[in-house]
Length: 319
Image (tube, rainbow, N blue to C red):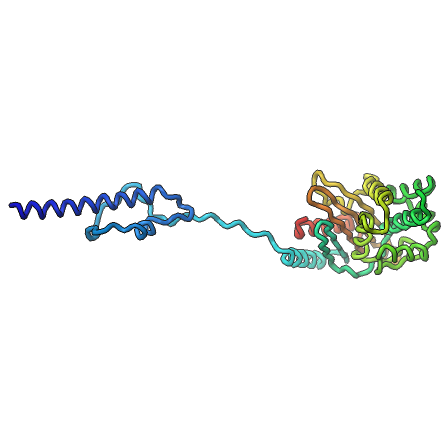
């Protein structure tokens, strides 16, 4: 019957369109990148098949994937300076609860950013005062428009490289003892340092110590190029037995300067003052660090504490 054949053909045509349209949609879904691309359902909504026959229960199509697209994990953002400082404060406070008293300061010369923990607390310097003596000796020679004499240079080398006390006492006297070094400190901007006639008992802060370290390299500071070069040379060639403290922070390929101080204090039951000041330089790094401590039971324990504190600053400030 013609009418019946036309109806059957129409039904077959519609069914064919429906099957082909579904296959076409499945093909689109399989070819799209899953990273942020439309899902199968999104593609179907974006390109609906016109006049498609009502959906009917069909056997699953092989290879069809309906899982949600896998999104790439966002890269964590770098911590802000405020977050770094907060984390370092917390780490140092936690360590301070179990360690002898300490202070630490860090100056990043690339950014100008400073950090200090108990930055204005005063400690006896022990031998780190020898950096002040060296700076004042260099300034005195500059004022006289001359180089160091051979005797002064020899004494300076022994004072910094070997931490020789007799050499220090000789230079301290040449500078006018406490009064002369104190006057020089004003030129260096050391406002929290009180020089003692027994030079090793000079009292200072970590803030003043990183200020002094910055003056040793500041091209616009009071020390001229020759003086800065000599200070760097001496502090970067200390005896191997004395390169602990700040140098423990240096990574492979970086350079360091350092001057350490250690003293068993008779007025504190022979517990140890252990101090370290210095600078770390390398690709992308130019940082001055000062760590001052006292009340250490042993010298080795104090060194361990100084290095632990210095390493925490690098871990959290990311320099």
